[in-house]
Image (cartoon, rainbow, N blue to C red; front, side, top):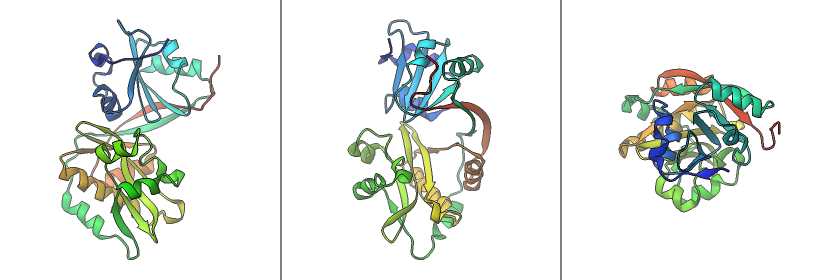
Length: 253
């Protein structure tokens, strides 16, 4: 059986040294959940939020097999967990992701210059109640808000900026998740508006917005394009890590 854990002290040690803000979100009970197979004396745990699942402790087949529904990006803490994921989900896509350092000292003047480069005909707007609804209209922009359980929760805990053109969201940067000390950034631009510098502008605007509230805008990169964008904004690359993209019914048993 899979259970949702409430006493985080029982598993905190499993995740020691793992600098992933999505894990912080779960352990801090801001959003997401911690899943275990033993509530009293757990030997393994899964931190699950958005579409990400982080596995730590002693490798547990039951915990891996009973993955959350839908598409999941499984992230093992070590090779033993990775091997178990491959055994349970042989069709899973093994990918390399890129961790970005969490101690960036941002240059505000540089970020403000990026924001000032907003082209004529485009409008920068914070994600408010109306923009939230507009985000849900397009699969490209839905992830800006979809990890939060409700509109009210996003407006309270989320932070986001978008660029509009003729009333349409063409680029945005938002909190994929929230933890006590900051957010994890999600950024995307619609295909016909890419390569115009919009992602740089909207990310700079969101970072400045976070710094106003003393929130840290954490960055994790899916690919090298994302790494390069982060470096342009002042972040530093940390290390590569392995993850597994698992589809809805991509299991062996």
